[in-house]
Length: 153
Image (cartoon, rainbow, N blue to C red; front, side):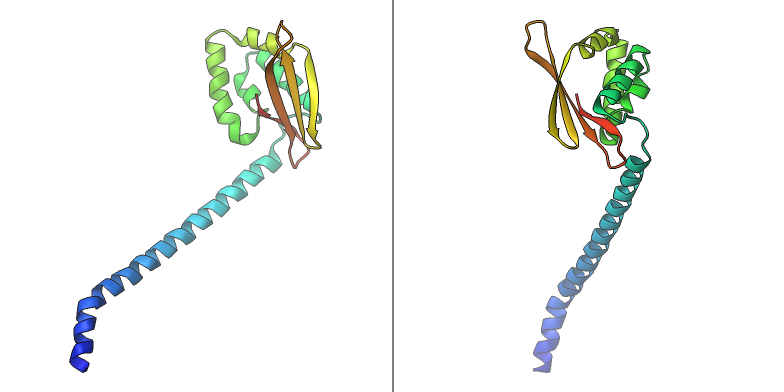
C-alpha cells in the first residue's frame, strides 16, 4: 500500500504542486489587478470631483465651449467634455483646427438649438440644418460636483 501511495505521489505530485503554484500566482495577479482598478477608480473620482471646467447650466457649458473654439483654444475646449473623452476630443478639435474648419464648426454650434430634457442630470441639444433636419445632437450631463460637461457631440 505504501509503495502504491509513493508511486502515485511521484507520478502526480509535480503536476499537483505546479497547479497549486499556478493557482496562487493567478490569485496574486487577480488581487493586484483589483487593487490597480480600485486605485484607477479613486484617481478618476478625484479628477471628476476637482474638475472646474464647465458651467452651472448646460447652456453655460456650451457657451464656454464655443467661446474657447472661437479663440482657437482647442485644449481649453476639450476640457468641457467629460474627463474620459477629453483626450479624444483634444485630438479631434486639433484636427479640425489644422484643417481650418473651426469657424465653420462654431457657425454650426451657434445655430438655433432645441433643448430636450432627458433627465434631471442630462440635456440634449438638437441643431438643425438649413432643411430643418437634425444635423447634430449635443448631450450634456451634470456631474456629482454640479458642473455640466459635454458627454457627446
